[in-house]
Length: 212
Image (cartoon, rainbow, N blue to C red; front, side, top):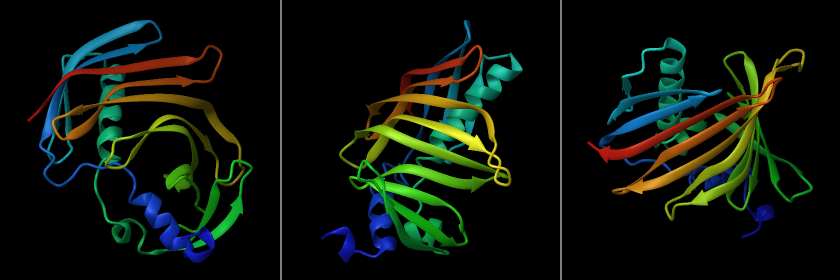
Protein backbone atom coordinates (compact mmCIF):
# COMPACT_ATOMS: atom_id res chain seq x y z
CA UNK A 1 0.00 0.00 0.00
CA UNK A 2 1.39 3.41 -0.94
CA UNK A 3 1.50 6.50 1.26
CA UNK A 4 -1.24 8.05 -0.89
CA UNK A 5 -3.63 5.23 0.03
CA UNK A 6 -2.93 5.47 3.78
CA UNK A 7 -4.23 8.18 6.08
CA UNK A 8 -1.47 10.23 7.74
CA UNK A 9 -2.62 8.78 11.09
CA UNK A 10 -2.22 5.17 9.90
CA UNK A 11 1.09 5.92 8.19
CA UNK A 12 2.48 7.43 11.40
CA UNK A 13 0.89 4.70 13.56
CA UNK A 14 2.78 2.00 11.62
CA UNK A 15 6.13 3.66 12.39
CA UNK A 16 5.11 4.29 16.02
CA UNK A 17 4.23 0.63 16.48
CA UNK A 18 7.52 -0.41 14.83
CA UNK A 19 9.56 1.07 17.72
CA UNK A 20 11.21 -1.47 20.02
CA UNK A 21 9.63 -1.50 23.50
CA UNK A 22 9.71 -3.77 26.54
CA UNK A 23 6.61 -5.87 27.22
CA UNK A 24 4.60 -5.89 30.46
CA UNK A 25 6.64 -8.86 31.76
CA UNK A 26 9.88 -6.83 31.80
CA UNK A 27 11.47 -7.81 35.15
CA UNK A 28 14.01 -5.01 35.54
CA UNK A 29 17.76 -5.48 35.69
CA UNK A 30 20.98 -4.74 37.53
CA UNK A 31 24.11 -3.37 35.88
CA UNK A 32 27.59 -2.11 36.60
CA UNK A 33 28.03 1.48 35.45
CA UNK A 34 31.12 3.29 34.17
CA UNK A 35 30.65 6.99 33.41
CA UNK A 36 33.38 8.95 31.62
CA UNK A 37 32.95 12.74 31.51
CA UNK A 38 35.60 15.07 30.12
CA UNK A 39 38.49 12.94 31.35
CA UNK A 40 36.99 11.93 34.71
CA UNK A 41 35.68 8.42 35.44
CA UNK A 42 32.98 7.37 37.90
CA UNK A 43 31.98 3.78 38.67
CA UNK A 44 29.00 2.32 40.46
CA UNK A 45 26.12 -0.11 40.20
CA UNK A 46 22.50 0.43 39.29
CA UNK A 47 19.16 -1.32 39.43
CA UNK A 48 16.23 -0.58 37.14
CA UNK A 49 13.09 -2.09 38.65
CA UNK A 50 10.14 -3.63 36.81
CA UNK A 51 8.24 -0.35 37.26
CA UNK A 52 11.22 1.43 35.62
CA UNK A 53 12.56 3.21 38.69
CA UNK A 54 16.36 3.61 38.70
CA UNK A 55 18.55 3.26 41.79
CA UNK A 56 22.28 4.08 41.53
CA UNK A 57 24.84 3.27 44.23
CA UNK A 58 28.57 3.88 44.51
CA UNK A 59 28.70 7.25 42.74
CA UNK A 60 29.05 10.02 45.32
CA UNK A 61 29.67 13.07 43.12
CA UNK A 62 26.30 14.79 42.75
CA UNK A 63 26.51 15.85 39.10
CA UNK A 64 27.81 12.45 37.98
CA UNK A 65 25.07 10.68 39.96
CA UNK A 66 22.43 12.93 38.41
CA UNK A 67 23.82 12.24 34.91
CA UNK A 68 23.72 8.45 35.36
CA UNK A 69 20.25 8.52 36.91
CA UNK A 70 19.06 10.73 34.06
CA UNK A 71 20.33 8.35 31.40
CA UNK A 72 18.79 5.28 33.08
CA UNK A 73 15.47 7.14 33.25
CA UNK A 74 15.76 8.18 29.58
CA UNK A 75 16.50 4.59 28.53
CA UNK A 76 13.53 3.21 30.47
CA UNK A 77 10.99 5.88 29.52
CA UNK A 78 11.59 5.21 25.82
CA UNK A 79 11.08 1.47 26.26
CA UNK A 80 7.66 1.79 27.95
CA UNK A 81 5.00 0.13 25.82
CA UNK A 82 2.07 2.52 25.43
CA UNK A 83 -0.60 2.03 22.83
CA UNK A 84 -0.88 4.47 19.96
CA UNK A 85 -4.25 5.65 21.28
CA UNK A 86 -2.82 6.27 24.76
CA UNK A 87 -0.05 8.44 23.34
CA UNK A 88 -1.66 10.04 20.30
CA UNK A 89 -5.42 9.56 20.64
CA UNK A 90 -5.98 13.30 21.17
CA UNK A 91 -3.86 14.28 18.14
CA UNK A 92 -4.71 14.79 14.49
CA UNK A 93 -2.32 14.01 11.63
CA UNK A 94 -1.76 15.39 8.15
CA UNK A 95 0.87 14.90 5.47
CA UNK A 96 3.54 17.57 5.05
CA UNK A 97 6.39 17.66 2.54
CA UNK A 98 8.75 14.96 1.33
CA UNK A 99 12.35 15.96 2.08
CA UNK A 100 15.27 15.43 -0.30
CA UNK A 101 15.96 11.98 1.22
CA UNK A 102 12.38 10.86 0.62
CA UNK A 103 11.32 11.03 4.28
CA UNK A 104 7.66 11.95 4.72
CA UNK A 105 6.79 14.83 7.03
CA UNK A 106 3.81 14.35 9.36
CA UNK A 107 2.18 17.46 10.86
CA UNK A 108 0.38 17.24 14.20
CA UNK A 109 -2.78 18.98 15.31
CA UNK A 110 -5.04 18.68 18.32
CA UNK A 111 -3.29 18.24 21.65
CA UNK A 112 0.18 18.30 20.03
CA UNK A 113 -0.48 21.23 17.68
CA UNK A 114 2.79 22.47 16.16
CA UNK A 115 4.73 19.24 16.61
CA UNK A 116 5.97 17.43 13.52
CA UNK A 117 7.73 14.24 12.61
CA UNK A 118 9.38 12.59 9.63
CA UNK A 119 8.96 8.94 8.72
CA UNK A 120 11.30 6.95 6.47
CA UNK A 121 11.30 3.18 5.92
CA UNK A 122 8.58 2.70 8.55
CA UNK A 123 10.73 4.41 11.21
CA UNK A 124 10.42 7.85 12.81
CA UNK A 125 13.52 9.62 11.50
CA UNK A 126 12.85 13.10 12.91
CA UNK A 127 11.01 14.39 15.98
CA UNK A 128 10.20 18.10 16.48
CA UNK A 129 8.31 18.49 19.75
CA UNK A 130 7.35 21.21 22.20
CA UNK A 131 8.21 19.88 25.65
CA UNK A 132 8.73 21.59 29.01
CA UNK A 133 8.87 25.09 27.49
CA UNK A 134 11.42 24.31 24.78
CA UNK A 135 11.38 22.80 21.31
CA UNK A 136 13.51 19.69 20.87
CA UNK A 137 14.48 18.44 17.41
CA UNK A 138 15.95 14.93 17.08
CA UNK A 139 17.26 13.57 13.78
CA UNK A 140 17.99 9.83 13.58
CA UNK A 141 20.64 8.78 11.06
CA UNK A 142 21.00 5.03 11.59
CA UNK A 143 19.02 2.42 13.51
CA UNK A 144 19.33 -1.12 14.80
CA UNK A 145 16.68 -3.71 13.85
CA UNK A 146 15.99 -6.05 16.78
CA UNK A 147 13.51 -8.21 14.86
CA UNK A 148 10.85 -6.85 17.24
CA UNK A 149 11.12 -3.20 16.26
CA UNK A 150 13.89 -0.69 15.71
CA UNK A 151 16.20 1.17 18.11
CA UNK A 152 18.02 4.38 17.19
CA UNK A 153 21.78 3.88 16.80
CA UNK A 154 23.12 7.32 15.78
CA UNK A 155 21.15 10.56 16.16
CA UNK A 156 21.45 14.16 17.28
CA UNK A 157 19.33 16.55 19.32
CA UNK A 158 19.12 20.31 19.61
CA UNK A 159 16.91 22.65 21.66
CA UNK A 160 15.38 25.97 20.60
CA UNK A 161 13.33 28.66 22.30
CA UNK A 162 9.72 28.22 21.05
CA UNK A 163 9.10 31.99 20.92
CA UNK A 164 12.33 33.33 19.41
CA UNK A 165 13.67 30.23 17.66
CA UNK A 166 17.04 30.89 19.32
CA UNK A 167 19.17 27.75 19.83
CA UNK A 168 19.66 26.84 23.49
CA UNK A 169 23.00 25.15 24.12
CA UNK A 170 25.03 23.10 21.67
CA UNK A 171 23.80 20.31 19.44
CA UNK A 172 24.38 16.86 20.97
CA UNK A 173 25.43 13.84 18.90
CA UNK A 174 24.59 10.38 20.23
CA UNK A 175 25.78 6.82 19.59
CA UNK A 176 23.80 4.02 21.27
CA UNK A 177 24.80 0.34 21.44
CA UNK A 178 22.52 -2.46 22.62
CA UNK A 179 22.84 -6.08 23.72
CA UNK A 180 20.18 -8.76 24.04
CA UNK A 181 19.89 -9.97 27.65
CA UNK A 182 17.37 -12.79 27.95
CA UNK A 183 14.39 -11.65 25.87
CA UNK A 184 15.19 -7.95 26.11
CA UNK A 185 17.44 -5.50 24.28
CA UNK A 186 19.17 -3.22 26.80
CA UNK A 187 21.52 -0.29 26.26
CA UNK A 188 25.17 -1.15 26.96
CA UNK A 189 26.83 2.07 25.81
CA UNK A 190 25.83 5.64 25.06
CA UNK A 191 28.20 8.34 23.88
CA UNK A 192 27.07 11.97 23.90
CA UNK A 193 29.23 14.69 22.38
CA UNK A 194 27.75 18.18 22.82
CA UNK A 195 29.13 20.92 20.62
CA UNK A 196 30.96 23.75 22.38
CA UNK A 197 34.41 25.19 22.98
CA UNK A 198 35.53 22.79 24.24
CA UNK A 199 33.04 20.04 23.39
CA UNK A 200 31.40 18.19 26.30
CA UNK A 201 32.08 14.44 25.99
CA UNK A 202 30.15 11.84 27.97
CA UNK A 203 30.25 8.06 27.75
CA UNK A 204 27.98 5.75 29.74
CA UNK A 205 28.92 2.05 29.82
CA UNK A 206 26.53 -0.52 31.28
CA UNK A 207 28.05 -3.97 31.73
CA UNK A 208 27.36 -7.28 33.47
CA UNK A 209 23.63 -6.70 32.95
CA UNK A 210 21.48 -9.24 34.82
CA UNK A 211 17.70 -9.47 34.64
CA UNK A 212 15.95 -9.44 38.03
